[in-house]
Length: 107
Image (cartoon, rainbow, N blue to C red; front, side):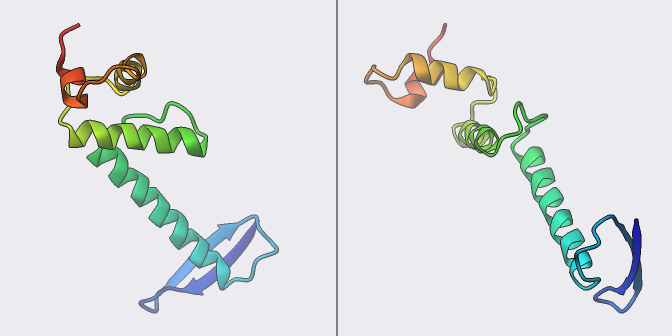
């Protein structure tokens, strides 16, 4: 482990622990800042789209789940589960019907 002490934007001192020895001390706080921004982004996405857990961890799976949650929110489909919407849509690919009608039909 390596301990680096750097100055933040306000002039305060930050002590950072890292196991990466190939990076300069100036780059390490920037990486921490970027990781923090990514964490904040996912926190906001999960809160606003009401995603409790990601079902898979691949990039494509996360994008699909975010797309489904966004569609669910935009179409006001709170009563349908995230897993149910793709199933309904895949069963109706050959039908000519409006998506709002499809998702509001009783089963």
